[in-house]
Amino acid sequence: MKTAKVTRVEFKREWTGQNGVVYYHDIELDNGDKGSIGCKSKLPDSIAEGKELSYEITQDGEYNGQPRFKIKAVSAKPFSSGGYGGKRDPETDIRIARQSSLKIASEVILAAGGHNSTGEIIADIIDAADILTAYVMNGKK
Image 1 (spheres, rainbow, N blue to C red):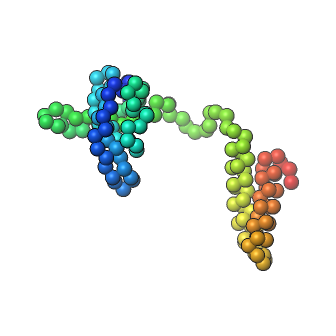
Image 2 (cartoon, rainbow, N blue to C red):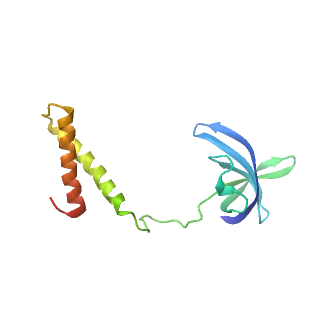
Image 3 (cartoon, helix red, strand yellow):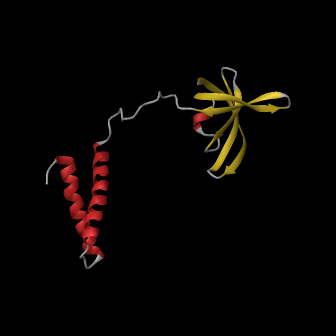
């Protein structure tokens, strides 16, 4: 992996494949590397002139007798074996607990059956989910 600053960027073409549109740009870097880079958007900020880019470069054939290079942006962050190193917003934990509680409550209540209306089922699911969320978040019934 290399890291250098972008000194020139020029949009060249777009290509549509099975995973959507890829926009190809020719870029030059302050260490002398030049090549083509594919991006999900046209002229993205991540490859703007003056931006630092971490990348891998490979030869991609020749054009008019000159070697042609392909540049692939890579994350400059070191590999992590898992876990979350930062602090998460407490509201995110509540949302996650609510989401999983709604799923469990709906599965249990729908499996039990015996409801006469959709409104009755939904109300029961929400009530049960609230109880489960409170238990998960606070350990209280």
